[in-house]
Length: 146
Image (cartoon, rainbow, N blue to C red; front, side, top):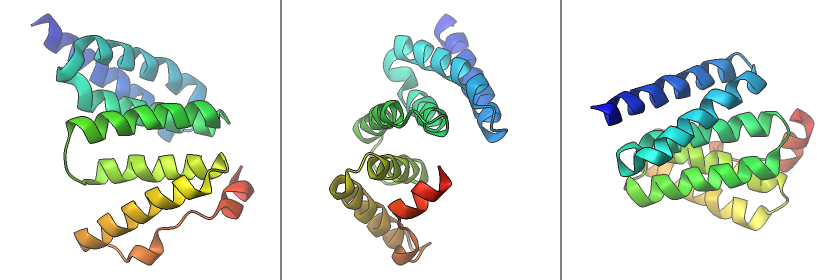
């Protein structure tokens, strides 16, 4: 059962990182998230979903610290894992896509961002819980926030 213990440890580390992130203690959030990802990558397929969650959280942390290029790479990894291993559009996938679109806009890659935004709007509209016009990322608004 060592694998299960390692998986549990990685989940705890992800939760610690997420707690620090909610408290806006981004520098402190980074180490437990990176350690969780390291463990999850060693565990392989048993921890893929957990790894995508930790990567998503780490992308948020990097973005909040102004490391947008690194955040975009990490968000892309999270999205690739999530799309490859876990079929279907659920809230976690849509949130990773939303973050990646935001990061693409910050990187001035508007065409790619617009494609992701359209996918998210359509998926949310199909789920019936949101008006698709409500979800947009305005680059000018992002500039004001940073």
